[in-house]
Image 1 (cartoon, rainbow, N blue to C red):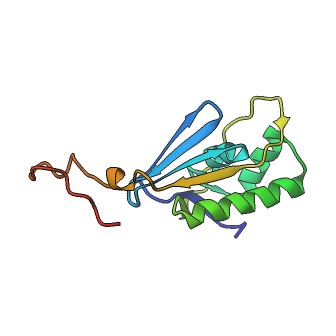
Image 2: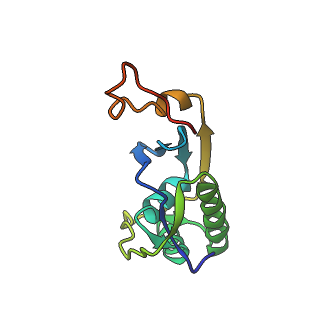
Length: 140
């Protein structure tokens, strides 16, 4: 898994950082996600397209953590993001890893929470369903 490159799975994945958390929405499935800790930096590094080794390098530069801790964390986060369809294998191996602020921060394990309570609303497509009287929900 580590020699492969990964990137955002589709254009239907929307991500936005707020303070120290990341919010992601998969418009195809109607699920939304909250992520925090090192998962925010993980996403920032891997989403444009990067190898696992490049992401590990970036996390090691940003955090006060051992190489072993970072490798385990990247493996865990990669598995989670792949399971939920947020990332996919990619040919893109962008060398543009976001720069570190210079000062390493204390290690904080990454996390990802999954929500489906707004699924029906997120699957509505009001822009493309204008020919009908009311938006029609996509089938998940």
